[in-house]
Length: 237
Image (cartoon, rainbow, N blue to C red; front, side):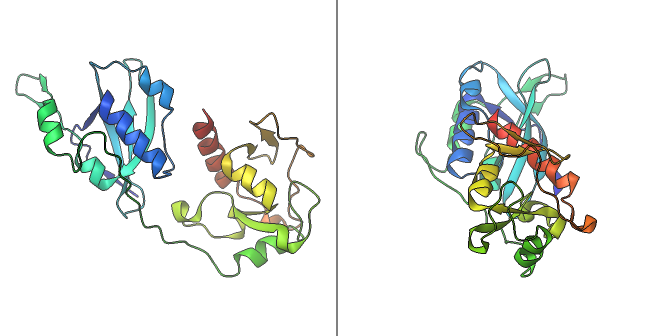
């Protein structure tokens, strides 16, 4: 990951909605709440104050400011989309000059309103022994229920390995396929303490905490649990 100079890039409301819709279609990790964007002021612009090249494979994560109170949020997009965003020019007298809508539209790759999808190639980082080690650490049993049939168990990454480069046993947890899906979708959360909570009223929790490995060296990383928890809460907000 490295920081990119934002060059005073910014969004108009229209561009922000278009870019967020693209992030949703492309299933990117950082998206914004759609109804929040609809309520934004058409006559304002929304500056980018930080740009990060997350994977060095053509995906950019930007931090956007929405109001005078400093409300901020991250959004992921392709590098191509990022490079097409307008730039503000600071004049010698300190005033800021924005691009005209004509100038912005002149750089469009496709006509306005046409949707397209750009993907980012991500190399899956996975140790071939990851599944065996994780299932062994949890005694071949789901950490959230009694299921112990091997074919129904998943060696789940707590936080995606392609995002953090961590394919160690401490970034893994043994879950049945049902709990793995719920955890991945953010319907259930695991706090760094191991406490299980739910954001879905239809999900019934059979235990309040995950079952921990017997070996202390195999314990789930509190750092990875916290990263996953923050991401899941943001996606559900």
